[in-house]
Length: 416
Image (cartoon, rainbow, N blue to C red; front, side):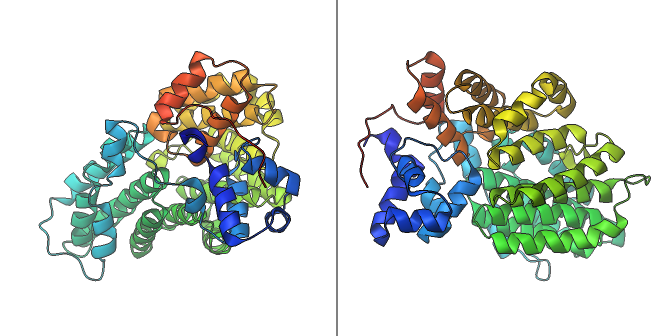
């Protein structure tokens, strides 16, 4: 087994199963797949290119998702290393409390809010190192400002604190720190709840559910999403002057669709997609908090849902002619990266027939926003899958492996 294989989920799955003393039959049954499919996964003959599959197998093996993915990964470059440090964020969200603020000097609230908006814009560009550079200090100062000063300044501070925690949550997820993502999302949710803003509270519920998804806490995710949808739906009027509640409801439905797709609940996933498509058609393209809610985002997210349900190739073909317009509409390196990445996953599901298009889109995703794709376990698995199937060592594959920090292809032998 070489370094490339040892870094793959397949090797970890096989090792954990053996350490547990479990047979292929037992684990496959618990994960809802066949023995033959599990064997192919463990041998590296098939890739873990669906998030739901990783979660199913982790539950069957009685381990965490991180035990299988091996996150966090070693940074491949200086920018990634700077982001991976997540400077001060852990201290800020674990130590500083809204009911017990730190004894820190705080800059004017308007200055803090502007700095948070700048960090969120950097996140939208997938520049994680820039997004988190001062985020820990901002969360600390905003915690102070949220409980002191005038009513208006406190409200501004709570809104900025919620947004700062959204940035921290998203970055921690991408960098393989799910426990920090969950804690940051919880702090932001508390700030939004104190503010009494239903749309912002709903958006932080989305962040909480995404953080919980990263550790495979499916029942808790269902509870968070169901309660948030019940709270926001009565005020989610897409024809109102303020469409933010409708946008938040749409994001909740999108997240619920993905959540059900991870569990192979196709009918539930499709129902939530229809709900969010209706909301997006009425609101049009929006970009509150750099979330890019609208028809283009729904189409792009729908592709990710289709991949998890095993119908990615057909979905990619349906939207292929619309991809240039989608990329122009999204106007976000982060969102464009995600669209290309999910196109890569979709074409990879054709089992070799569309690997050229899969490779092209994976390369585009990495060139657009390297920090947005290199730390994603499924992205690494798609790359390994493409490399295993390649009949020739083309330059693009070699380059992607170098950029991802994955060593060369190794030989595999059958082993149960």
